[in-house]
Structure formats: structure tokens, C-alpha cells
Image 1: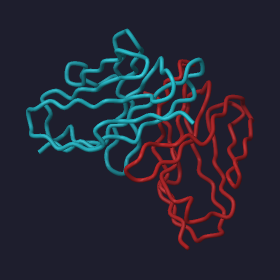
Image 2: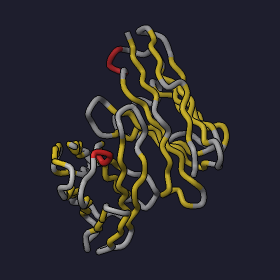
Image 3: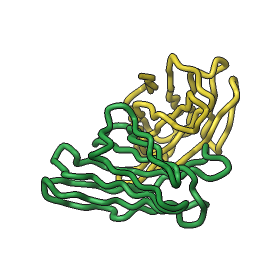
Image 4: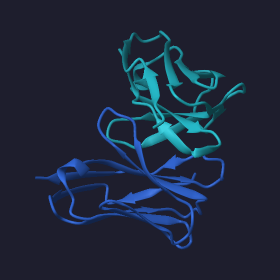
Amino acid sequence: GAVVSQHPSWVICKSGTSVKIECRSLDFQATTMFWYRQFPKQSLMLMATSNEGSKATYEQGVEKDKFLINHASLTLSTLTVTSAHPEDSSFYICSAGVSPNPAEQYFGPGTRLTVT
Amino acid sequence: TQLLEQSPQFLSIQEGENLTVYCNSSSVFSSLQWYRQEPGEGPVLLVTVVTGGEVKKLKRLTFQFGDARKDSSLHITAAQPGDTGLYLCAGDTSGTYKYIFGTGTRLKVLA
């Protein structure tokens, strides 16, 4: 089956620093990737939709200058949390849509970010 | 803001029991998905339903899409401890494959 990886799986950073999270589709080309965040014991909240070669589309309430998304190739999307604060601590999950049927999105294992 | 409400929020049952989880919204979905997520991992897709009234079966799991495509249910027969996890429905209202997730149902099956 389609495999999506995320790196790192967990990261601890100091308040004010930036953190980059990578999402890779390992055995397929993903025209669309989605970024979610999940707080403990809660559901997933869609942050943004990322299409290869174009600017990401952010959901209402998500600061695009704080959560920078780059989708430079059909197998890689990155999420950079800039000037991280403790309230940004969360579980960040990406998913990749399988062309030509993006309804079949496959999720990465997630990245746990802790900001101290 | 569209909202997918799942019920119940939490469910703890004995092995062998049956259960049903519901996913409801006021919005019409072009497609709806069910996922299962284990702690510290990403969700795993169980099924996608697209046609009103559609019923799909996956071993002991039965998924139904409402006739009006506003709601869905997941029924598990003879639950096993391995079914323990967070069950999430996710709906696409725009036909653009952008799925909004439900509030989640946390299931615990006791041996």
C-alpha cells in the first residue's frame, strides 16, 4: 500500500525557534498533501491544503505566516512552525492524496512537537 | 463552519458485544470516510462511501451512508480488544477531497 513518512517523529524545541517537519510519499506521487494538527484526546483539525508547485490554501484561523507550507515536489511537503510557542505544542499529521483519486489519502505517522 | 458530531464520545464494552457509532451533520457530503487511529499514530482509512444509502462491509465492520448523505454509522459485531482505538469520520462537502474530521469516538474493548 501507499506509504507516507514524516520526519522527525518527535521534536522538542525552545520557545521562539522554528521547526521544520517533512512529509514524504514514499512509493507514489502526491499531487495534494494535507496538514492537520491534533491536540490530546481530540480529533484532527485541518490546517491547510498543499498542492505541488502552488501556494498552500489555509483554513480559517490558521496563520499562514506562522505555519509555512512548501510543496516543492510530488513526493515532499514541509511544514515550518515559525517562532514556536508552547501553545503550538501538538501532534502534527500530514496526509497525501493519491493521483488520480485524491479521496484515497494516506496519513503519515505524525510528528509530536513540544515547545518549552 | 460545518461540524461533524460523533456519538458516543466514549465507549467501553466487553469483548463480544456489538456497538454502533454515529456521525451526523447538517451538511450534505459528496463522500464520507471512516478512520481508526491508535495513540501516537496517524489515522488509517477503513472505508469511503459516496452513494446515499450505501452499505459497505469490512469483516466485522459495517458502514452505512445515510440516504440524504448527511450522516453515517459504523457497526462493529462481536468487538475484540484489537478494535480499541479512536474512530473518526471525515466528510467532504465540496467535492474537492478536502475532508473535515468528526469529533471522534474513543472505543475501548475489554477482554
